[in-house]
Length: 197
Image (cartoon, rainbow, N blue to C red; front, top):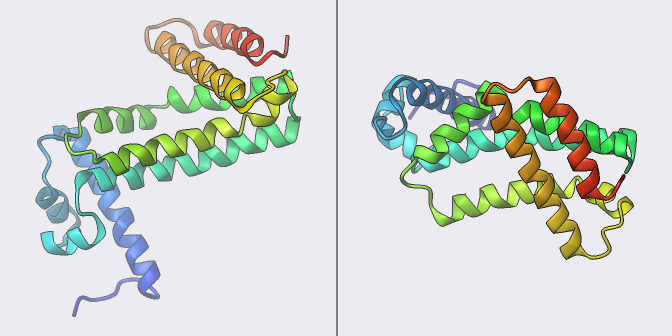
């Protein structure tokens, strides 16, 4: 019987999952996702390959847990700023700042690169990523309604347009445009899209 390293089984499982995700992150950064096998990850953690399958049947499942570990605090912070500042232009600007800081962070870039290079993302995992993004955009709901979005479809369109502005802004920062300039224009354009001008 394998030795339990936590105070209880739940702690042991959480610690093993964390170790696997951290090992996968290191190996993916060193060699690229395609060049890393589940056996490589298991060896890095000190698990047998069959033991690893109990936690993660594919590299896609590892990416999903990595994604959720980044998304959970982002969702919480996004909701916090809207709750703190209300459905106002200031609330939207704070929300945009949270998103831009997140998408320009090196750790997020590593996750995006790893996900793009993963050949085995199942439809369920892709759907999970999409659902988590919809949860994120839903934190904008009160702001978009305050800006005049009258229907769920109109709010969805505005949320996706705002998300596109954030992604484009991240690309501009990565391309060398000063972050302060990008942030100011993101605030201006996002406020207009949200209908808060």
